[in-house]
Length: 71
View (cartoon, one colour):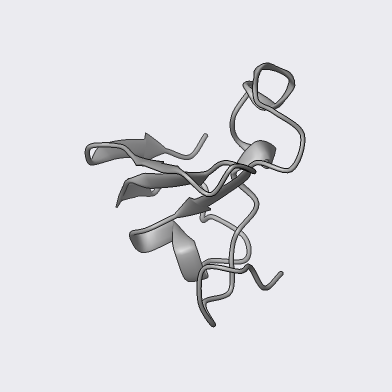
């Protein structure tokens, strides 16, 4: 899916995160590391990543790097 934050293909983090209902409607979350261009994460692999959360009011929040273990 394409987002307003550039021409990157965004992997939908809500497939991996259980926070969607806590965020305002219209919030867009994008992976900014290894998962930003992976359609299907590989089982047993670790990915180093961070998130940028774009809020409907135009503000954004960037997380620190973290490791995602795909099981």
